[in-house]
Length: 208
Image (cartoon, rainbow, N blue to C red; front, side, top):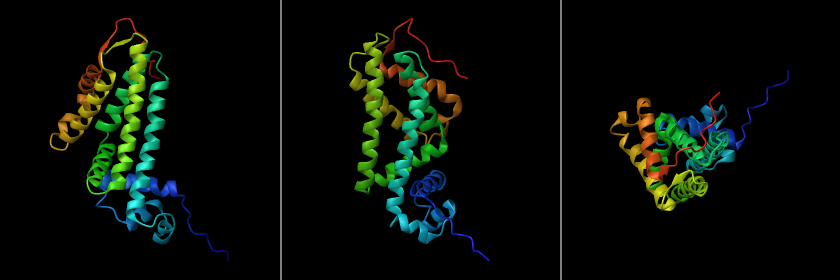
């Protein structure tokens, strides 16, 4: 009788399984056996693609970066005005980076890893630079379109990013700071750091 072929997983599928586990158990609480089991493959299959847990961590970061690019683009492209795109980007960031427990756990775990691992630090720094450039582009366009008043966009975006990271860290000790009922307040506070909206600007596209 024919034997069933072994399960073969692509590297991205393995990285996604690792990302899911890291987001719920933390990096230290997940070993290669757990990652292989989570992906439904043998440990040997996992090692065929990744020679170490560090490589899996970096691959999981890659999954996170790609998901962020796709999601924030989808969140902003439906908005009709330049400042409305800024609002949509902040709204997405608050919901995903601050209010989503798994996302928040993963990013804080990566920051902790970055304290001791230069490769992880360089990877995460590159992502932060990309995210900041994205917000800089949106904010500069909003100012250029006359929909937002801001004297120093670069400084404003930098302060907003620092505020988001601060909220995330504080949530470790004060969980209520990232509770769902805090969403509107957080969004308003972060947007206020970017400048003053000009009355009469186009709004966000209505949600389906």
